[in-house]
Each structure stands twice: as C-alpha cells, then as structure tokens.
Image (cartoon, rainbow, N blue to C red; front, side, top):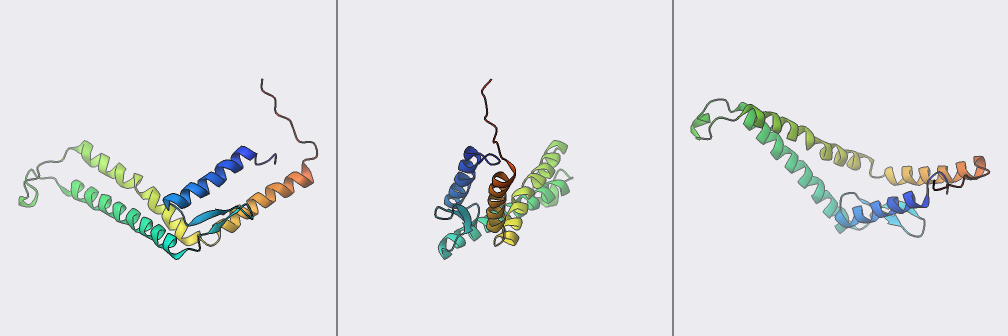
Length: 145
C-alpha cells in the first residue's frame, strides 16, 4: 500500500490492540478481516464503561477543586483554617480543569460514535486501497538520501 504504508498500518493495529488491553476504547482489531470492530464481550465493555466513569469522576473532582480554590479569598475560609490561595495556584487549577476536559470529550465522542467508528476506519482503509489500485499506476520508490 502506498497511501497508507505498512508501518502506519502496523501502528494502527497496535493502537487498537493496546487500547483494547488497557480498556481506553471499546474496539479490537479483527485479524481475519484486518479491520477494527466493536468488542462483543460484555465484561470487557463493562470495564471500558468503568474507565469512562473514572474519567468523568476525576474530571468532576478537578472541577470541584478548581471552584473551591478560586472561591477561597479570605485567610480563614469558612472557619476551615485553609489559608490564602495564591493567584498562581488559582491559574493552575483553571488550567488543570481545561486540561482534564480533553479526556472527557474524547470519552463522550467514543460513547456517541462507538458503533460507527470501526466502519469509518474500515471505509478509510478500503478507500486507500481503491485509490491506490485505480489511480496510482506507477508507485514511487523511496530513496534514502
């Protein structure tokens, strides 16, 4: 394959294989069809849902802490004796909240598109093969300079 090299395809397969092992996505690489598919095992899907739940819980914890840190203005906040929070820590907590929003967005997209994503990747790989067979007549050979 010229459009998608064998090295890129190797890393796509590896990403699906390791992602299934770590339960970061609900997909696996089917060796027979050489394409991704949705995991059918209920226990593996339950572990992935648990991973999604932990991601959401951690984000809401960081969000709660960011709100708590940004509200603390007095030296003795609510009689808790927690003291004054520096502006640097407030900025850091705002950054941390924004930073931990990305995994939540990725998990939401995985939840919403878990049925269609394997089809999309399969169609992408098929389209690359069709484009190569129909429109690339003389594949370029790469030279190491």
